[in-house]
Image (cartoon, rainbow, N blue to C red):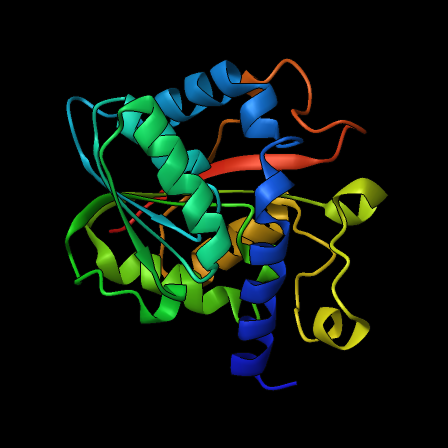
Length: 218
């Protein structure tokens, strides 16, 4: 399957799941914990320009906005963005949402202080392209935050993608922290710092091995 075809199928899949997604989402069930972890990981002294790539229903975007940052976000799934926009409006939060694939999003180079990618890399045909996009739009010294998990260890978190689509996603089983560290280094980021120790236990039922990493653009 060609990457463009795979990405279109992925977006359609998440649009179909969007209406019920937040009902079982970790960032809803443990909202205060996620907010505390991201607040610490951002290490921000004042309002920053934040871009959330692959925002889904807006987990990182909404937290960042609640922390007082200026937030832009994109996702290829119209359905997921509809949920994110509704959540932002209900919370009185100002987030500029854009429907577009990560590699096609209109964010200009050197315009962000922080870029977030939460539970995104595992579901992309080219996850390295997303990290390169993050590197491009960050200012020098800017921070990328990547969070993901080894989803193959817990059946309830596996997608139900068709077999051909799943086979076209190189990280469909999920990522380990070491995987992500290598990918960040290969993209040109500096040494990564972990933050998942701030959770008292894995925020996902079944103790899915997960990570929250930040790294800076030199």
